Structure formats: structure tokens, C-alpha cells
Length: 331
Length: 113
Image: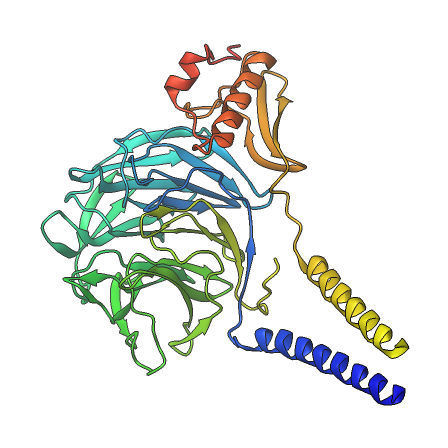
């Protein structure tokens, strides 16, 4: 009798332990995608979306944006090594969101955008050494939700929305003589809220939306010849789910990434682009809240993604992304 | 009787183990630690840092929002400004300092050589 009861106790205990081990294992195995996310400094209370910025050396700069009530003009720097923020010189133009930001030869640029009433043309450059802003020549046509990138000592701004229509024109900024010239030859459709990333001085452009259609074409820009070449579509494979708008694009260790964004609501999925095979692979989704209009700071080997909004909730957190690591929930 | 007692001892031990495991698994965060500030002496002026526990959240070597690299003229001004930022964070507001905040608190752009 006693032995039987004892055996019964062991059996129940054993089954419970096995059940525990089994459930903890299965929760780890349910997601095979590579990529880990680690919480970094919470930018306490300064939740904002549609921010603009650039990364210079190991500092990510971001400013302007919209917090749900106001258009913003404050400007901040995130120190990647130290994991802290500093408030820098205020953006001198009218407070705005949906501007573009890019870096050319160590100088930051922010311009265009939307102030709540009008699409804007004015443009400014930021000197990191002196913490000062200087107005430069305005973009020839106003727009918001454009793309902007700096490559090969020039700045480029294109696509976007001008208040009446989505656009497909591109403009090239020459910092030497402070002039904008139109760049012809982009073969893609007009669009707003597209994404770019740059790998080895080749600029990849995709996603975005126009008239409610999420675009599936994908392009690469070679700045030495200033020509655009079409790559495989973003829906080339059945399992691809890359199309979206208001995403962030960034580069880490030779791969390009498109993360978060909007596709009939905010999304947190992440796709990795291999420029050699022209193929995409899904990564571990962004760990924080799903979001659109976020910002990414990347120095080429490390990347931080944060801010943005989900619906009408404006976010203030920042996560570091390790694309090749196994996912861990606890960090 | 003895075996019933043993049975309950097993169950209690097991539950204690599960509870211990779940507590052990929790990531301890510094969320409950309070904000505080430290003045940074920059030789020709002052800055501040906003900390939570041991962690620096904001390091401000120059007066926030101002163009250029203007430091606080006195330790008292740096401390007053840092405390204003903390009061904003604790009220759930943005830590952004506006020009009007600085004027209200009589913060002068210091360290004029």
C-alpha cells in the first residue's frame, strides 16, 4: 500500500516536471528566425514619431517629429557607446514631422516635411563639432514623407507627397556650391513613405504606398553612374511579406534591413536583404510594441531602433538589434 | 497516514520550486529606482547628468536647445536645470527643455570668457 502510494507520488511529480520542461522548450522553439532584440535607454517621456535624423560616427542624431499634440523642433543625440541622450541645439526651422534626414561627409541634413498645414521645402545642415545649424538652399519642390540619403559626397531626396500628389522625382544636393539639381531616371512609380538602405555605396529603395497600394518594386541606385536598376520584386517569393510603408531601413555588416512600418496598421516584422543573391529572409520581429514612423541609428555594425507610434500611442523606447543572434526573451 | 503526509510534503516542495524558479527567471529592472542629478565640472563651466540608479540617461555638457557649446556659468544653475528636467520626467512629460523654461529659471548662457 505504502509503496504503491509512494510510486504514485513520484509519478505525479515526474509528470509535472516533464510538463514544465516540455512547455518551456516549446516556447523557445516556436520561432526559428534569427535575430535578437535588447532593450536600451528609454527616452523617458519624449515619445514622438515621424522623426528625422542621421548617424555620424557613434552618435545617432534625431529631431523634429510629432508627439500626438505638437510638431516638435527639439533635437537630440544618442551616444551608442554610452547608451545616453543629450539635448542639442534646437532645429531652427518651423517645427515639423515627416522630414528627411541624411549625412554627407560627416555633416547632417534635415529638411522638407510637414508643419501641420503645409508641405515644406526649407533645408538645414547640422555641424556636430560646433553644435550649430545653418540654413541651406531649399528643395525646389515641397514634400513630406520623402526618402533622403547621402552617398558619394552628395545628398539625394526623392519621392514623397506634395500635398496633392505622390511624387517620383529625385533631387541631388551638392554641398560644395549649395545647389539642387533634378536627377532623372528613377523608373519606379510615384510613392510616399518609402525606405532606403545603403550597402557598399549602393543605395537600395523599396516599399512605400500610393493610392492605397503598397508597392512591390525594388531598386538599386549606383551613385557613380547615377543610374537606377530594378531588382527582384518584394513579392517574388510566396513567403515574402515585405511590402509596407513608413518602415525603417538600415544596414548591418553588409546586409540591408527593412523593419516595422505600416500595412493596414502598425507592423513589427523584419526582413533581411542579401545584395549578393538578391534574396530576402525574415528575421525575429521587433520585440517592443508594433510601430510605424520609427527611427533607426546604425553605424554599420550596430543598430538601434526606437520611437515611432502604434495607432495614436507615441513611443519613447529604443532597442538594439543583433540580426545574427538567437532570440532571447529576457534581455 | 505517513505516506499522505509525504505526498503533501512533495507537493509543497514542488510548488516552492516552481515559485522559486519563476522569481529567479524574472528580470530585475531598475524601474523603481528614483531619478537624480549630478553636476559635471567642465573646468570653464558646468554641465549635468540625469541618472536613474547607476545609469546615465541624459548627459548635458552644454545648455540644452542652445546653438554652440555654451556651458552653465554656475554649479547652481546646472543643478537647477537638471532638477527641472527630473521634475518633467517624474510628471510623465518630455524631458525637452525649451528656451522659455530657461528664461523662467533665470538660466543665463554662461561661461563667457
